[in-house]
Length: 151
Image (cartoon, rainbow, N blue to C red):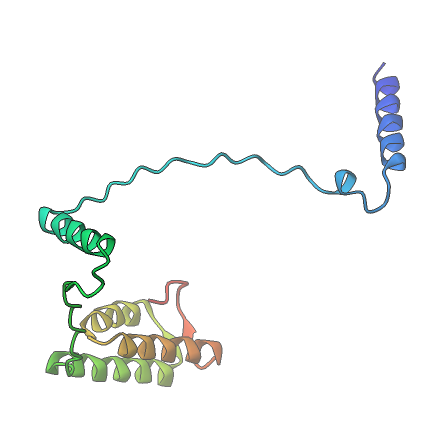
């Protein structure tokens, strides 16, 4: 009985494959799952001042008064020079990486100290530079990590 069923199934499958036209998308492409769009409720809330300013801007735009004063744009933040703590952390991070490269090993202790130093760096560029130095040394095989956790 099992042989007969297996033979019939094999014959039917072979017949179906033989009838498939080469390049027929229905024969070769897997069925795409149907995905329903999810409704996402808006939870944004505006304060009374925001609503009043918005009403005033819309009202003046509808009235054709394009010269109505709008709220001034906020001033961009002024970049500040890194503080003494950030400069010291940058120097210590450089020293730590240089010592690790000289030893050829990036240990778990180095990872712990590096995390603390990177947190004290104020500029994103300094953090990126410090991490990039470690990654570059590992890729160049000048530094071998003790564990898969690098940072």
